Length: 337
Ligand code: PEP
Ligand code: MN
Image 1: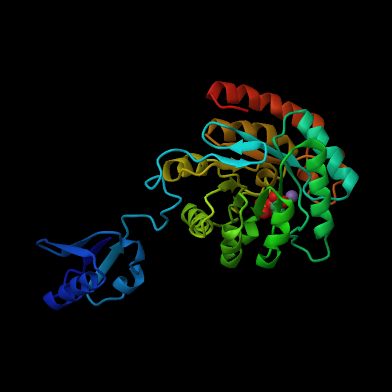
Image 2 (image 1 turned 45 degrees about the horizontal axis):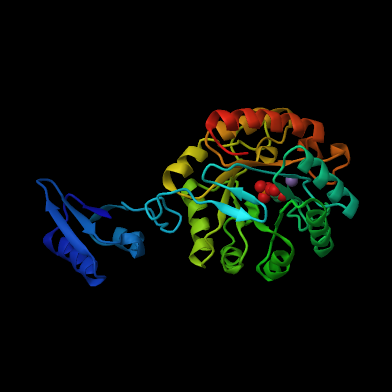
């Protein structure tokens, strides 16, 4: 941490800051300039309260040098993390493709789609049993019945399944059926839920909140890892901006930024990111070219009849073309798919 004192700060102000830093066992190194004094702090500053120092008399500015996340940081672990769920892996050169409907609608629907996406190359089956819908009058998911159908689709195809869990109380139930626990964008900062999935022995797919900064995104992953769960997959799914020609703004630049700061795998969801079928192939290819470890995409055998997110859902034929494109990029990038 670097503390810059105000121009008029006196010796007592400076000494007070130095005493507080010493008091928590860190080492203050004051640099006395002609105009003002700067105090550099040596040691792990992450537990220091920036605001407390900011509030001290004579302090102009306080800046952290270290990010507040540790476990997710590349400084803690230099090599890329590989997360494995059933037969699928993601990260460290292996791409994954999570595909399936927005919501589980019936046993037949999810089993049929599971076979169809597997046949053309999906590695994980997606499908919501508990749906976070903007309206309480929309279809809110089949609940536990949906989980049972997902498990049946896994049994029929061998595909591991990813599905959303919305409350801490439901984590044990969802973990009983799912191979990967999905935290939705609306819950990225639900800290009780993050702690609960951190204690579950299942990989976690953490979607970026629609107005979350990169730092907030990584701090949420830190919550999961701090509970002892090392298997976190990040997912960029678009953020809210002034842009109104796509459902969200797919922030692909976050992919290389995450790669720089963290060892965790990151995948991209162009379905929620764009809301438009015609943009899904180009944005998926762009995601892999940007360094993403995979994609998550909404696919239905009859998109028009999807009970949720019909307008952004692609057909199996469209998904098959997408897979063809991804294989080219994967080969070019030297990634396994
Ligand atoms: C989903 O993937 O089912 C979903 C609800 O996405 P998001 O949380 O990104 O809106
Ligand atoms: Mn959806």
